[in-house]
Image (cartoon, rainbow, N blue to C red; front, side, top):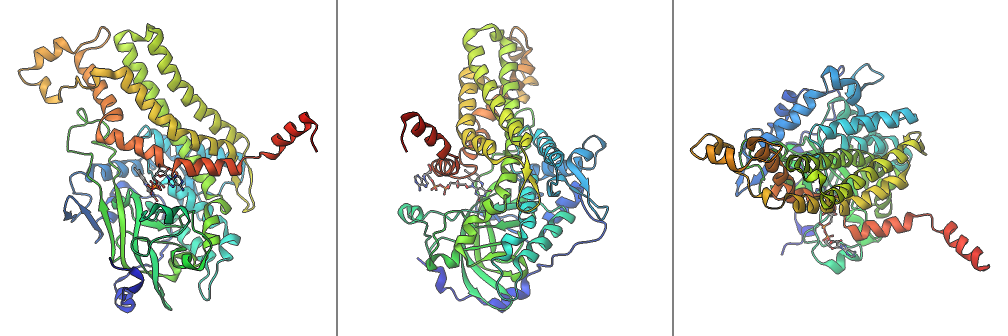
Length: 510
Ligand SMILES: Cc1cc2nc3c(=O)[nH]c(=O)nc-3n(C[C@H](O)[C@H](O)[C@H](O)COP(=O)(O)OP(=O)(O)OC[C@H]3O[C@@H](n4cnc5c(N)ncnc54)[C@H](O)[C@@H]3O)c2cc1C
């Protein structure tokens, strides 16, 4: 196998091909869906099903996800949503709310309302809406004193970040991110080291920037994003070996040498009746391969300092703002699950059944747990060291540690209650062929006509059984990283000493 450190990158060739200007047009701000789709028609290298995609906005299996996100961007302009999901900046430009630096309790709550609104457009089923990355970018751009510690030679990393934030904010860019190196060997990964053969690393540095080679997991929305943040994984051991793996930068998806290798699509071209979620919310995941990719200094925010990279998300409080966005999205998603379960129970009269009610109550309680944690975090918002107001971290940490277990249980309950009805799902076309009388007769429920019943269970199927639904469950399990590592981090952060002290006091120990 090839060791990337030995690849002879031709920096000058690559620099000439690269268009990395961080332009900020005066009078700009939120884009329309059409503007977003036009931006995706570039020279990006996206691969699916054995072929290179010519245009992601026209590619079956991707284009309906792109159209959905375009419709969400259009929503930003509508009277009923505009004041919730956008704000007007000091230049008078209307920008996405997640970019606003929160300076009060009320600002934190306004961000929460915007996140929740974005999530409700898909009922949480389009996970990677742009507000997630926007929130993180806002936090990084606020933490200039932290980023300035890494400044190297001529490159002013804090200034780079502020300029990139303004560029993304004023141009309403859609971002994805990739944080995780592929695991080549578990022992190596567990000891905080990476493989030269697979992990993304710097192979050359020159006056204009750096050249990187290797792969990263996994860019959700990658093919449908404008830009990709390539930020540090949080488990770098602070050693010289890890210096080539320590960096944070952002580049356009259409950067030469950047390839996205997609998983199979879950949008098989079915009608919205037949596949209510996968026909609309296919956000696509892709492994990202970097082949001698040139990154100019202006787009680098951290470099060559593993210890600093390890602190990046915590020290900037980006993780808190990201967890806030996520908790709002999970609330919208959980509420939708409760709605589906109650609709199913009501249609058959099982809403009077003790066992069914008990199972649905469990989902309701999980939903209310997320709501309570979110409320607790927002109500205890406080000013941070970067001059922003942030929700209290503890409740959001609890929510993000619980949800990877809650969501699979919600899906299990939907399977238990849905049972064989999740399979009794004739297609929309069967309502218009010779089967129609049979379907009208045999698929009805005491409180629901056949067509509505099939429609409801097709939705439940797409949530709990289909490829789309199964991927959603995997997504929730691994959203913020391996659950064992997350729990270990939670343990470390928890304020344990006062509680140990109480035990010692009780026992009369020193
Ligand atoms: C649908 C989906 C979308 C994703 N989207 C993105 C994205 O947009 N951007 C992005 O950067 N990443 C994304 N990811 C990747 C996600 O961050 C990783 O899956 C997650 O961090 C786990 O890493 P891994 O998959 O390499 O699993 P591994 O680290 O290989 O873990 C595999 C198993 O081993 C366990 N394990 C791992 N390390 C240890 C340890 N030290 N001790 C004990 N047990 C351990 C884990 O708990 C897990 O059960 C996505 C993943 C999925 C499934």
